[in-house]
Length: 125
Image (cartoon, rainbow, N blue to C red; front, side, top):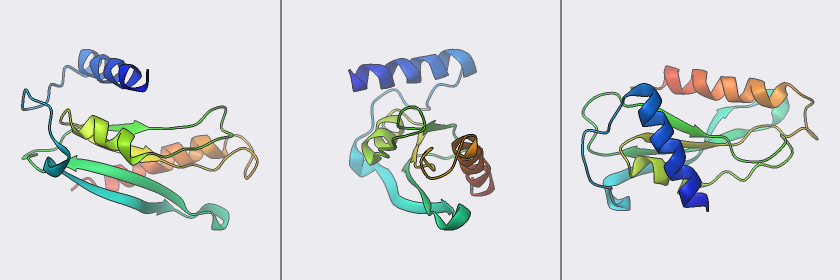
């Protein structure tokens, strides 16, 4: 079910943006560089981390797909596997953590998601 959800998201992204990866086959894990538990912000003393997977063959900037795991802003299960899934199709895959609603009230988690987008843009090179 999870792979089906991811496949539909990739297809939706390609449909909306018109972006197709520069290659036609699925990459293997050895063709992808992965950074785990990168701290992208520390609001109120809480380290917010991300996992990022980047295809080694990229010669030009590529879109990033940010996976925001969890439910109802109460649970977060960041997964390197999610980031790898997107990278296997030529995208930059990112899986993040955010503050949960028991740590910081709404809209803190939304602010964290906006912060990760700003962080990715600042570190795009």
